Length: 325
Image (cartoon, rainbow, N blue to C red; front, top):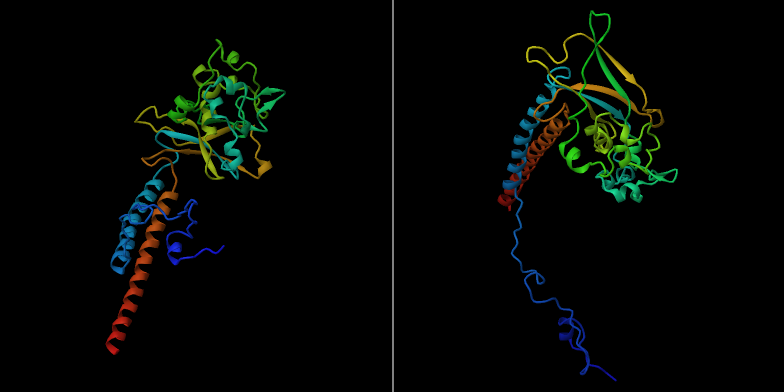
């Protein structure tokens, strides 16, 4: 049986079915969206619009970068309210598997997650047939060196510098994201049925003697759990508060740093360091942001100059060719 084929059928979305069949029409609906009739704005890039943009970006970014860079360099790392940091190198806290190795429900005090941690914590989910609290690779690798600072004066014994261990974590972490499980009278009872991470010496309920800085709300633990973006990083360890406006927080002199070495770094060819620093309106000393602004502004300005020269050269050539013809 022959069937006639009409060119109009192809325009309408394909060959039409014979009488009695169901017509198949693949033509899009007659709407502004599907027929691509929506209003649109397509900028026309010309020398008059592109070149000023490059110069404006350069003129804005370069002064901002210089200001940030100078501010960062003016931060003195021994005076004011002093912040003590520990630093690690060649430690990749940004590894995808490492970042996921935690249970936020458990860290928020959820009783079911406490005894049944997330599978993301493997292989640090259970030990000796008990759930690990806190579970995961991040918690298991927590920094646990102890740093003590002393002023060496004329006295027979060095004077210890008071290091404040509270107020070093973000407020949202301390009060929202991290909570101890509810239940028993003592913190030990609340963590009953769990075991400590493999690499820890003490269980989580013995991180500190003060109740408001123990367990999951221990600030050293909270600071460590906020993973760093780069393999070389620093984390806040202690705060040295300024006691008087008439005297510097750390007077000039010789200082002695006592380190209780617990955290090995040889296995990953890492290095440890201690930093004393003040802060400014932009935080601690970090010249990267200022350098980035200066670099982007300089590149934009340079591109503007190059494109201006190219535009001037070829525009003159086009005008000369038009006159010649």
